[in-house]
Length: 412
Image 1 (tube, rainbow, N blue to C red):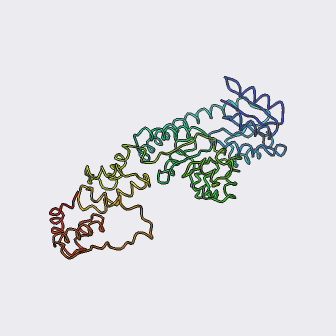
Image 2: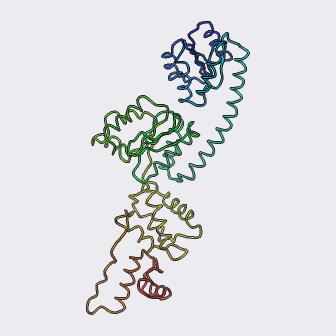
């Protein structure tokens, strides 16, 4: 266990250093706040002891900074025996306990024993939390392809670090979900998680949580410089920055200020597009369908249509396609005509949702049967495969529509 001591009094500083180094521990003792801050970053101590008194005004601030950077640290105030009010003030600001001068080795031993018991409880709780976090990621980010397993390995590797993370992937690859999973797998997983859109840093993840910053490539230079400043001088919270495009290309196009990508020094995470994930399309489609309606099935031809689709909208598009197919299908099995109808329409914006009905052109000499077939086919397409809606539009019974579809071979 590593300990950092801030104490301007040489005698008590040396006693604490020797005592906290016993049993194979490591201890560094300094007399100035500036030295202590440097060791806090470089040494990453498990225990921080800081003198707090009118003569040492920076001690309480150091304890607060130590806890903000790592809530699992032990933070102990060191006070003169006749100034216990200083200990109370430090504990009100977050210090866990206190020691007094002259140093009581018995009290120090009691604090260390209490810390060991607390660590045992926290370790047990942390193991359970991490198991749950892994289970949550398996549910939230399912996939079995080699490309996806590489991505989830990158998430786990980044979670083990404390450095800021660069998260890349096309739109629709579920970067926000991946960032949340990364946060939950990290040592900060029990702390708050927040999302700041378009580079805005006003969203708070607390002093010890994780902040996902999205849309940075669309943010102003001023906002990007504010982000770079926090990356260079961390404010306590951990930053994950997500980009929809290639970082090098975005820099070359002038959409990212110089130095921003370089400041994201942690292990990068890239989410591959759905078209590169092979069999994950079927796995995800069946998962989404089960979540919407456990009794629905995908016909083989419908699945073939899914596998042949290029998925420009990635996982988000697939989820929406399955939702639309469930809504439009009038039977327990979703057929190819419904699926092709769904896939033939991009994800709609609000402005594009209203569309005009298609026109069926009739020429002299066309047979009535051919006209009827084309009319039913166009109406089916307009209704996105919904047979009940087709019957209502054509003022026919649902049974008649089913018979005509079978007669003209319009299904499948």
